[in-house]
Image (tube, rainbow, N blue to C red):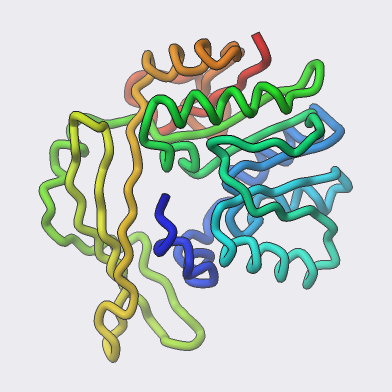
Length: 250
């Protein structure tokens, strides 16, 4: 589940700061649905806190206590009220329903087995109020990129960032692709000029192919309403980088 990777909550926010299009999209959907909102794999609350600031009752569920602590700290600093729940998205029961349930930033891809994915989607189905929507985004697998995951360590220039405590931080990754499991098994390395590899953390993400995704959704008692290829609402095509899926109870 990437526990070690997500134990560095503050660094995570510095590494992935550009989430404005996703925030705007989910904020708009929360307005559209109104009522209670649940985010699965809420992380540090970067998307849920803006929604809660609009006045929607919000619950964020995550397996990482470090990420939840950072979410709670950020919400408190902004005087935003939200409920933060330590839990496992594979099987959860919050004893209430929601008008919008969402999961973003590839959170569902931490569930590697079909059984875990279906169990998660079934748990979502049980938490949907009448007329509610479940929306999630995962990357659209690119066969060429997966084939390039040869275990070599490569610098990810686009992910470099400045840490106020350490200065400039570079990010390297080394990935291999397990085709049988459909899982990319990677190791992330964070370094500064003064401190090489001060973080070394594994991260494993499953690939879910477009037709497979339809079967998983249907098997869990959900129905796909629409699927977009980016945050602007462009219809999904085979070369789209994203699978942005809008579902309802079947």
